[in-house]
Length: 162
Figure (tube, rainbow, N blue to C red):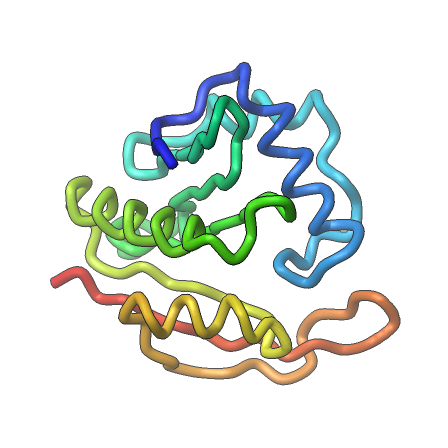
């Protein structure tokens, strides 16, 4: 998998992967697919500390990931959340791990201090991935998300760069 910065031309594939999870999974707590008009604005409005990366395999986007602002408050400028999504056809091949490690490297290169992950407690695969990559559990929020007719807990994980 070749990882590079995302371009506007990648948005259709990025959001096809994301919107699949919106409609069928718990990797995101969005409940409505992201419409096309929002997609370009999302990519353009990101700052230098908040890249979007795509991982290509044989000309297809197999995975994508991003570093996202944690809070608009200035004191949190060195803290981000991360997102990693793998296309259903490419899961189980280590692409999520490679994307997450690349995001952590990008966080270090951009002078960030802490990377947070907020993961549904039922999402065992994502939790295992993050623990393998060095994240530590720092908390859990009980029944804070409602999706598919049930309440979901969220595990808060942290990776400190330095």
